[in-house]
Amino acid sequence: MILKVKHASRKGEFKKIDFELRKGEKLGIAGLMGAGRTELMMAVFGAAKLEEGEIEIGGVPVRIQSPKDAIRQKIALVTEDRKRYGLNLTASVEDNAVSVIESSLSKFGFIEEVGKKSCGGMISRMNTKVTGMDQIVGSLSGGNMQKVVLSKWLLNDPDIIIFDEPTRGIDVGAKAEIYKIIEELACKGKGIIIISSEMPELIGLSQRIIVLHEGEQTGELRGKEMTQENIMTLASGYRKEEKE
Image 1 (tube, rainbow, N blue to C red):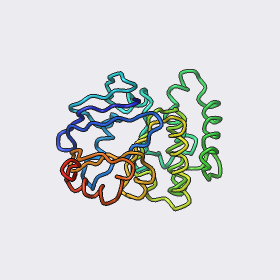
Image 2 (cartoon, rainbow, N blue to C red; image 1 turned 60 degrees about the horizontal axis):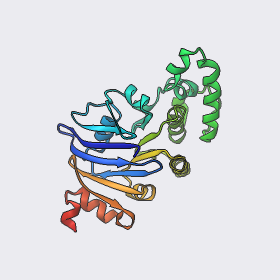
Image 3 (cartoon, rainbow, N blue to C red; image 1 turned 135 degrees about the vertical axis):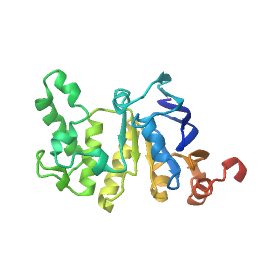
Image 4 (cartoon, rainbow, N blue to C red; image 1 turned 90 degrees about the horizontal axis):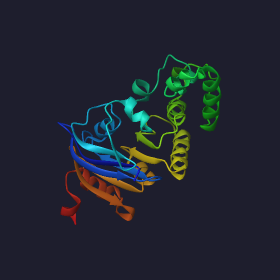
């Protein structure tokens, strides 16, 4: 088990949430607006305080009180608002791409040499369309911005990657590329968590889906259970055991 969250609670946002994530698994988080999906993941990532509950990484209890703690635990968060939280729009592609790893590189004086090489390789791997590493990120399309966000996290080689609305505001072609990247990461053993308001996307990407309603966990769906009808039933407040 790569990640285990037990009885996670934060007043007014979510309460007593339990879930596990395995290596190579793609876990979906479903729910209507205000269900607490993003808030839960922000707490797992240390961007908000987890008031009650425990987090285990690889079976070992950990304290994640800040994003820096999460990064040290090899957790990455691709936020739903890349322009506000994921990127520095006035900085270059290279500066954004190395932003997560720059502190470790600078300790050894390698940031310029290694940073450029690593950045270039990752940008190429993501098939990101840029004029050069010095291009300002704010001038890129939504899909290419998202690839830069992914690049900055993947350079840190995370074990757990949280995608919050991974394809919001990007075109069909870029969506397909993002889906392919998610599949490749799962095949490499990365634990993937996906939040998406697009149910076909969530069903298509996930192997298992947990559903939230007003901060409470109403059920878990697997395989053929993962239908839009079942998700909406649970997201509306009916618990899975009641439905059955």
